[in-house]
Image 1 (cartoon, rainbow, N blue to C red):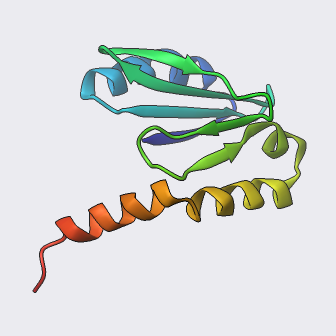
Image 2: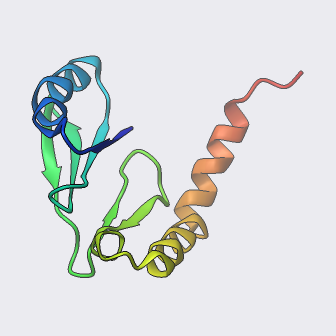
Length: 110
């Protein structure tokens, strides 16, 4: 996953960079457009990026990092308490715990 914060580089981030990241197999690509006050979240499917839309509550959940939840509407509105609450909700989920355990199991022990 790559996250870009873009102001003047939006056209470059949403075209050239996105194409390169897709060719390299980056599974998720997120662009936070500061001037437009928008978030573009893409997931790689069959070699092409598909835009992910937030659910009815404004939440997007990562497919690559189980438990990573972004309250997009709240982030853009400056409601950081809700952004943090949603993130903590995801990090407390069984899916995230299983993901962390899987990562832990793959780390070589010294």
